[in-house]
Image (cartoon, rainbow, N blue to C red; front, side, top):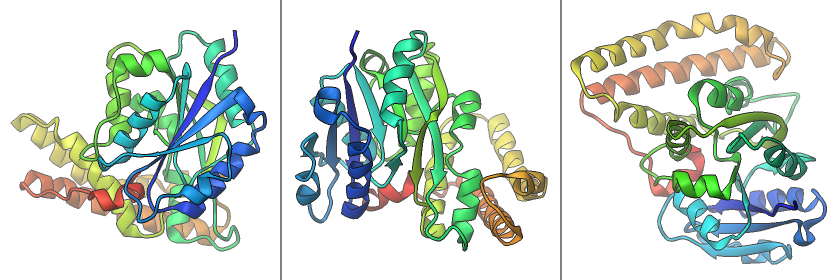
Length: 303
């Protein structure tokens, strides 16, 4: 049986990244009838019409509700394929990405959704920034997310349409929409597999503030489940543990094969320490009743 595939890409103010993303998909081969792409703009200063017009397999539309989740949901509604794939607009699908999706899901009927490997595309491999070094080791750990936390990041994800419709669409910008979707799917008994050959590359976040916004969303998502005094106490203990946790991560930083050299490892450890202290502070702020919601204008930096 031949299966159809639609790749859905939310876009916000990143025409150059989108162009590279679509170039990489075009190089996957056999775009004529083999797969289609729906790009959903989410309020850019300028619609990426000139970019999308260069690719005959792309449909461009727009979603006015802020957030990558609503944008992806519209892409699903406009598609008709039995397999849905999601990638972010500044990510580069590595060779074989499409083949892996089309091969794996039909060969594993017990699996409802899959996620793959994500590597950092370094601006200068010989001179990493601190955030690049940190994210190379600790960012986009899809194997961990899938096998231990029971969700896959929506920036490198594929799912049967029937499964997506059963679980329901992604949530809005006020939650970590991929975690929420994965947890709903898992609660329904749907299996999510990690597929390492389903690989993409993505640039690291450019600023610490972008990293911080990501963690603001995840922390607030988790805090919504805190509904008792005992849970609040455990939350405070977790925050305290984050303060000392970087010391325990030294072996991981030293052993990682995703960065090389003493300088890169030191930068990774320094950024790790800073972000974990930030997370601990954010958790304590929530206990005191303060919040830090991400804004719709910056959603792309949060995912």
